[in-house]
Image (cartoon, rainbow, N blue to C red):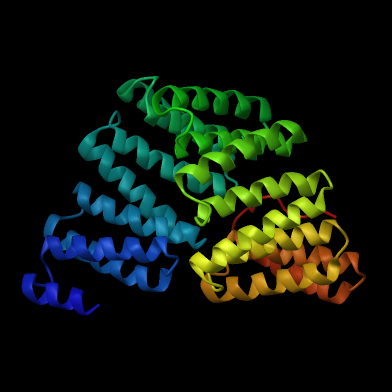
Amino acid sequence: MLAVEKIRNELGENHPDYATILNNLAEFYRTSSNYEKAEPLYQEAIKIKKEILGENHTDYAIGLNNLARLYYGTGDYEKAEPMYLEALRIYKEILGENHPDYATSLNNLAELYRTTGEYERSEPIYLEAARIMKSVRGENSLAYATSINNLATLYKATGKYDKAESLYLEALRLKKGILGENHPDYATSLNNLATVYKETGNYVKAEGLYLNVLEIDKVFLGENHPNYATSLNNLAEVYTAMGNYDKAESLNLEALRIRKRILGENHPSYAGSLNKLATNYYSSGNYEKAEIMYLEALKIYRITLDKNQPSYTITLNNLAVLYKATGNYEKAEVMYLEALRMRKKYSVKTILLMH
């Protein structure tokens, strides 16, 4: 922070370049999940931009959008929504309704509504964003592929798997033509399609696609990258669903090792890997190991995340299911009630253990 203070002294507290530096530093902290450090920097950058540029400038809208993404990431959706709406208003007024930045802003708002389970509000916004990208960027563009991919994610969340599969396949076709079959973004689309097959019980198709994703990640990212760990966990979920618990455990443990080494033991993603491994142990009847992992994940989430974050509630729910299965009804009740209290603030549409 000494470097920031030096720049502030050189430029002054109300210089746009100082605001940009604050924003960039905040972005670094946000992507590192250091939300407490990121928030005041974003707020200070926004305040400076508002004073210098006014409330109807695209740079001010960018600042609002960035802070909204922070709140979205921590599950504070009530704070995120008005900022996304205000950024959208500014883009509409200054750039018009047929500008890619306006479409991107629409997408951000749609993502928020999808995450909170407001699907009826989300769908028309996604559709409008896709229409704009198709009109402005063209139907063979990466921007349009991203838009229909996002819409497919909504359909997957609402159980409209046929629609989701169709759009994911189209996004995959476009990315293959633009980026080739060995690009990380192509791998992302493969992963999305694999998730549809996994959720519909087509494990053979899902396994093949996840294996393909893993190979692409291995080449482009290496075997010690957090995203490679994510791909390991995704494949492990398929093996857990197929009852191949040993294979799943091996992959989960490898993902856990990678995230521990790269991110540390107090990172939300490390907690996510603990949760995946715990679910595999639960599914195989190893309740003792599962409990240890779930409790450790909860501890990390309490330290690193706002408790409104969906991952925290999912883990509470999973632990409650475990306690119910082992006859520990008092503990199960406490966990269920806490999860229910959290879920009243949003709708968790990620897969939960349902027993």
